[in-house]
Length: 330
Image (cartoon, rainbow, N blue to C red):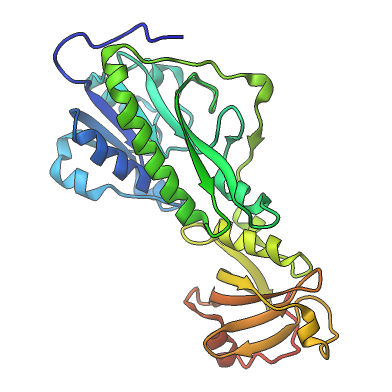
């Protein structure tokens, strides 16, 4: 399905951007090169500080205070009137968790663009990249993708405007995966904006019969179990590391966050230690804390946060807390 609307004057598209993440910052920088930005809507810090990847977009605000607006709710009357007053041709949403109601979607002359880090219609929903890393049983490379689409009142169901493949590598964590999403989003936008401006863009309907969906994760979902395989534990850590809440275990009733870990040697190398999973089998200065896990494997815990939420090397934490080989972590 082709585009029916176009900007026929010599003026460039007037763009309004709605977002509150690091991706938003990159989209602003990209659009500023070619098109006038008539407004940027950001999430108020009271809500933003509860969101992973939150970005205040302070540089744009300081340079363009008359074009910057913070909201608690994208659908409230004040926000609606502010956006409407800017008379945008196009709205770009990037990194926003609130669902747009119809009256917001109907403001721009053309439509609202959204990005979703999945090959839609596969992978609709929340926490998609976290889930994909967690599901990667052997830490292998996964062929995935990022989709640019026309927003509607449902989540991630609108017509597709562009798609860019990405690979989630076995070496990636959630941060490096997002780097690929940022880059691919900018690539799609710079490739597609000229065609939207000329009216030569294409809209491809999603095949709902192929749709799959992921659901939002809670911080409590980050609890790991040491009877899991080493790869499953590493996947949780990679998927939930900074800026997400983190995977964790419990030690003396305290929650200990894990930010970095690696696979260790087979338990055959620690044959004298016959206790169950979670057993500390080695503490090595400059390396970390080695723990027995499922399937006869071990994992090196390398960077953790202690009970005071202070990041440190796991071996330093172990020494300071007089952790001993043979103790069992939960």
